Length: 456
Image (tube, rainbow, N blue to C red):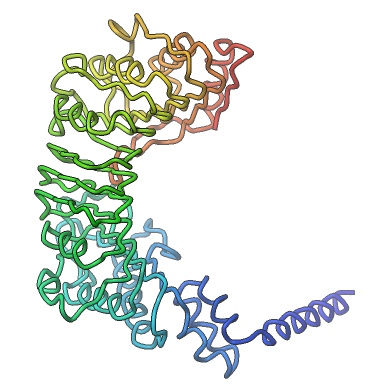
C-alpha cells in the first residue's frame, strides 16, 4: 500500500514539475521574486535552466532576522557573529551576481546591536558598505529603498547610541547618483543629518514616503517645498531632535517622536498626526499650537504621553477636532496627573467613533479629581484597551468608559504587552491566559447587553 502511495506522490510531483517547467522564463522569474534573494539563489541547483533565473528577479529583500538562531545558548556571541558574517557575505554575493537592470524594491534589514553592548563586533556595518548599498540602489533605479539596522530586542542588553554612520560624502556626489525614481525611503539606525534629508527631498521628485528612526545627528529638520509630493513622513527616536518644520501640501500622515517643537505650515491634506508630549518632549502649549494648524481636518490623532507632563492640558486651549474619527492615547506611565488629561482629549473630539488607550505600565491604583467626574460622550462606538493587566486601576478605567460612553457598542480588551517604544517592552509576570480569565470575571458583570465585550 505504501509503495502505491509513494508512486502516486512521485507521479504527482513529476506532473507539477512539468507544469512549472512549461512556464516561460518571465513567469518563473516573477515567482522567484516572491522569495528572499538567498532562497531564490538556491533554485539554481534544480537544473541548467534555473541557474541564472534568480539573477533577474525584480525584488531584493534581505532580512537578517529571518531564520536566525535563538540567542539562548552559552555560545550566543559566537553564533551571532557567525550569522552576521554569513549574512553580509550572502548580501554581497547576490549583489555582485544579480543581473536585473532595474529593481522594484531593495531592502536590507540587519541587526546592528551585536552581541556585546560595550563595543561593535567585527561584523558591525562599515560606512563603505552603506555607501555600496546606496550606490547599488541608485544604479538599479529602485522606487522602494529600505536600510533598516534596528536591533533585535534583547532585554539583557541596552543600545545607547548604537547606530551606523551615514556616508555624508555620498550626498555631495549628487551628479553621479540618480534617485529620481525613488518613491519610498526608510532609514533606521543610520546617522543621517538635515543635509542628507534635504538631499533626498531635492533629488527624489517622486518621493511619497520618508521614514527616519534613531539618528544621533538630527537636530533641526526642514521638510518644506510647494512641489513636494510627500504623503507620509515619520521621524522618530532621534534623541537630539529639537525642531521639525513641515510645509508639504500633499502630506497625509505625520509621525514624530522625541522632539521639542513642531511647526506646521501649508498642510491642507494632513489627516493623521502622531505626537509625543510630556517631560523632555514637546510642551503643552506647543502641542496645542501644532494641532491648531490642522485641527479642522484631522481624522486620526495619536498622542504618546510620557511620564509627568510639565503642565496639564487644561492650562491651554486644546483645539476642538470636529472631523476626528479615531483617537489613540499611549501612556509610558499612567500617573494621576496624566490620567486627568483623558477627558480633555476626548471632549475635544465630539464625533470620534473609536478610542484606543495604550498603557505601558500604571503608577497609580485609583482615579481621582477629573476622571472621577467624567465627561459623557455620545458618539463613541468602539473602545480598545491595550496593555490591560487586570489590575484594579484597569478595571476602574474600563468602568469609566462604560459609564461615560453612553452609546458604546464594543469594548476590546487586549492584554498583550504594549511596547511604548521599539526598544522598551513592558515587564509583566502575569500569564496572558490568567489575564484573559480575570478580565472576563471582572468585566463580564459590568458590561451591558448592548455592549460587545471582546478579549483578545
